[in-house]
Length: 618
Image (cartoon, rainbow, N blue to C red; front, side):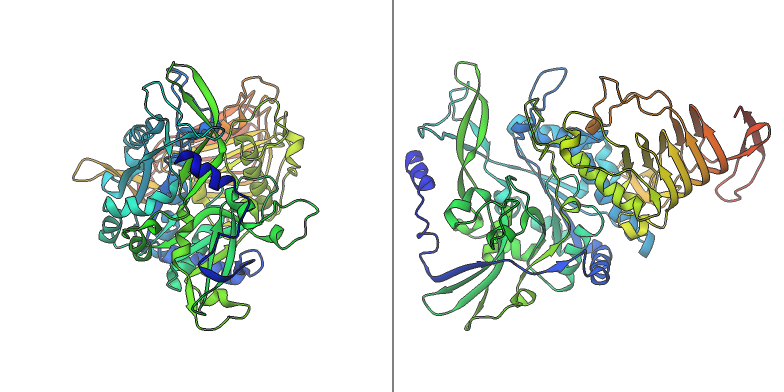
C-alpha cells in the first residue's frame, strides 16, 4: 500500500485531479484589502471586537516542529514548537497575550468582561500534550480558569521511507509516528465534544491560527476577518497576503468548476504546496508575472462558522478529513530500532484544516461573472505580508543563506512592523533593511510593544506622539495604560507592570481570574530624553529572538499593582531603576539640584495621603 501511494504521489499526470468534473479553472480570489479600503477595514475589525462574545479560539499546536531542533537544556529531550522561548516567553504564551489584548480592548469599549473559550489540539509527539498542560498549570491557566480551555489530542500516523516505501521503524520496533496534519481537527473536535462545549459558552464562530506564526494578530487582520465572517454569516474565511518565493506554503484560489450535470460550483479554497506540480501551479519568482504567480499565500489564519465545521466533522466519509495528501517533502527525525538518531525523507498521510473549504462550495445553474466572491459562503481578506504571516518554524544553520521561517527572520518582521507603526506616530526610527543585512549581525534596534497597547494600530497611535529612537536602542513596553510624547531614546528603556491589563482575584474554585481594567499600572512620559549605554551589542551571549541580551546600562521602570509613574521635561542619563510600590504614584521632575522624585501615596478611593520625596544626582 505504501509503495502504491508513493507511485500515485510521484505521477506527473494531473488529468485525474477532477475526473468527476467537466470543467475546472482557478482564479485569483478578490476580497477586502485592509491596506486600500481602510474605512471598511476599521469597520470590519470593530465588528470583530464587538462580536468577541460570540467567538472561540482554536489552536492546532500538535505539530512535531522537528526543524526547530528545540531541546530541553537540562534533560536533552526534544521539545515541541509551542515551547520555543520567543521574545522572552513561549510561543503559546504569545498566543494568549494576543487574545487577551483583544479581550481588553472589548472591555475598554463596551465595559464588559469577555473570556474567550480556547480549544487546543495537541498530540503525544515529544510529550506535546503534557508540556502544554504544564505551561497552563504553571501560569494558572493564564488567569482565565481551567473551564475556559479544552485540550484534545490528535492521533499520530505511520511514516514511510520516501525512497523505498518501507515503514520507518522506531526503537520500540513500532512504526515511527508523526502528527497527520491539522485537518484532523474538525473530526476530533466533533468526536471529543469540542463544538458542543463552544456552544455552551455561547459561541457561533471561531478564529484559528498556528502557534509558529508570530505576527498573525498584528493590527486589524484577525479581527477584520472574524468581523466579516460574523456579520455576513460566512462559513469560512482566509487571511491572506502576497506569496514569497521558495516558501513552503500553499495558495488560496477561487475555484470554478462545472460538473457533468451542467451545474457550476464556486468557492475559495487552498491548494497545498505539495500539490503545485499536480495542479500546474508554478513557484513565484522575481521575474514571473504569470497568473499563477499572483495567487495569494495561504497562511492558515481562518475564521470558521462552528455549525458548518461541525457538520463536516460529523460525516462518516472521507470528507471529514479534508485535503488528504501524501507529503514527501519533509525530512523526518527519529530514533531507529537500534537506538541511533536518524533523519530520512519520510512520507506520511496528512490532511489540512483549511481544505474544509472544499465542502462549502456554492452551486449555480449558470456560469457566474467576475465578482462572485461577495456572494459565496467562503471569503478572503488581504493585508501586507509582514502583518499576516512570519513564522518561526526552523532553526537557523550556519550555512543558511536565508532567514526565511527562522526565529531570526520573523523577529525582523516584528521590528519592521514596529518601525512602520512608530514612524506613523512622527517618531524617528531607524530603517530595517533586507534580511541579508542581518544574516550574521545584530539588529538596528529592539522594540517590543505589548499588544494590549492596541492591539489596533490606530489606538496605539494615540499613545505614541513624536520623539525619536536612535540606532541600537531598546524599547520594551509591558503596560497598556501608557503615554509617550516627545520622548528621545538613545539606549535601553524597559517598562514592566504587574497589572498590565487588570488584576487577578481568586474565584470560588480557588483559581486566579484576571479582571480587565482593575487596578492597572500606568506610565506617562512627556518631553523626556533618555541616554544610556543600553545593550552590549558585541556580547557573545546575546540571542535577540529570545530577547536574551546583555546590557551595560538601562532605564528600568517597574510598576507594582496599580502603581503609576510620570516623568516630564527631564533628562534621564545613565543607569536608573525606578520601582513604584502598589498604591503609589512616582513623579519625576528636574530642578537645578538634580532629579526630584516625588512619591505621593494614594488610596484607590481617596487618591491622596501623605507623601515622601528623595533626590537623585543628575
